[in-house]
Length: 317
Image 1: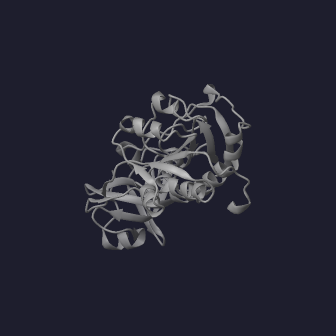
Image 2 (image 1 turned 180 degrees about the vertical axis):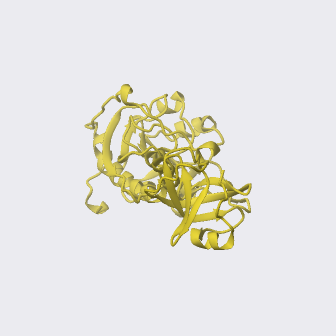
Image 3 (image 1 turned 45 degrees about the vertical axis):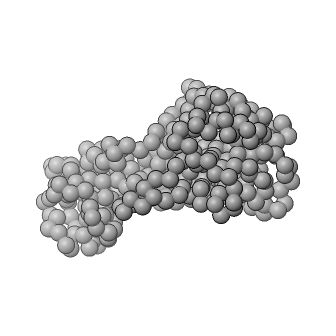
């Protein structure tokens, strides 16, 4: 998108609220076109195996651009300071806390959210993961007004994105953050001018994409091969699907389905070693793991893992 050709109003008082990598291109696109008075993000927290405390990705953008950055443990702690800034508009994207009504009523033009699904589908904190895990063929971005109930506000604009067969959570994440940036910038002028659409969500069409739990990450070998492949794709590159190999966590980063059946063996049993990985019996057939990672080790090709372990007849759990 050619940001310089967008006809926009330059003087609204805007506060941006976001936290992870997904929010960064959306914030950066906003900064190319508008003045952002303040940024609100989650507190700095330990990251990685070493537990090093690092700023959130959105805070890094705030520091780079010398913008006021607020990091309350609970958003209510920042209500007074936000109110004093007298914002015209608050824009949120993956902030990580539910906003109370006391905050939603502060901005003159309301609070809007950039959400990574086609609402009312996949309300919740992990819509990108679930779009793939749940077998959706399409998803997208919704710009919406915020309401007290999670992701339930009126829709302003939407843009659809096709989920390709080879998409992972990571690749879909990267597509959607760019679509989110562009759609926000295209939609903002109408919001500032009061000419935007406002469409209520159809509650009969609601589905959810709640935050991923440890249970969600575990592979159940009794499930269908389609569901298992979708789980592995949806959880790549974070947090990763896993199973147990000899009581150790084995993360599975990629796999595919075969037409093999293997009716008479237990789900989870290693079925064979192939040129690109090793097969595993699942509920209705077989999947082949092609990239894995044993706890405490790096990612490896599944063929290399097979070469280093006696897999035939072993059962993954």
